[in-house]
Image (cartoon, rainbow, N blue to C red; front, side, top):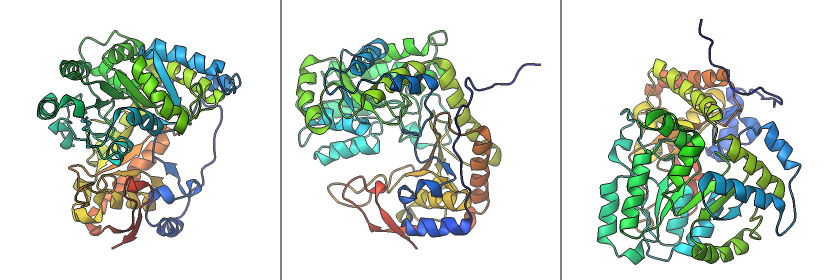
Length: 458
């Protein structure tokens, strides 16, 4: 018989999990004002809040941390990471930062001015936050197919080139400092972008002399989907595909806590020495000196190894197979999610599950609370709370998609944990008709409110 699949690693260290009672969880979520960000980690059984910085590092990464050079300036750890970035991405200039939003802060401080327009394919929360905080706009140019969660196409996170060119034609060139292409497209459900779309987006940007910035948090997962779904790439390695992707980019930002598989870190990289010089002052002012930028030397070394390891097919294959397993189980139970299964998470379609909860009562957040109460599983709302208010009208924005993201940390949970998650989703789905009300906001910040929002049950 053919041998079954097994993971390309073995487990060396484990961490105990405490299982709580529903009564305990009811108390804890009430004390947290129904915001799962405010629930303590020991009050969570299976934590799917994010895959950012929550992965399990390899033995090579832990070993590399012992060689970290903690010199304030000119640390050897910096130069080791610099070499890896040049080898993998082909980017000659980079500035380390403590995480992805810091990279956005550094580059947008150099590029953006009030009134600018930064189009993209579904900017994620921090990206849009940095843009709108600077009184700029962030129009969404994602393909319309992304809004149909039950439609299965291989590259559902792509840029709609007609929407993008319309913005280019209707606005002066100097008002558009860059275009942001996010791979994979997190807000649309962890959906990938094809090499063809990356290339055509770059060509359009260059025709209008607008720099292309690739938001690269899950670049390796995107390369995996190109290899497995796009004609002409089956025989190419992940590293070869990544190198081709970035030949089309002028700038890249990355939260390395995802596909770099580190607990903290990120960077911004670019081809222009002039832009590098403009961005340096903001790096020094907000992050640290140029050769550490908010990261310790040991973190720089762990990232260098993580980037090298996670651009190998076997590591990505194991990770994406586990996400697909959750999707397959949900298919078996008839539970709707953003199809096909994404690279880092399953995104439950809250609108199709909780059909009796009004949109004003935050459908996806209601589903998130129900899942926590059911089994101690913590996910995150990707819906109306995350969408914030319109910066002009101050009215709540209600996006087409109300999603509950279940982000799977890398090499952390077993397939049995995945089965528990699926069973908990099934239990909620079977009693969905009984869930008819949600929550109202009692406190919110003017921007990025979902991190600290406080709610009460209606």
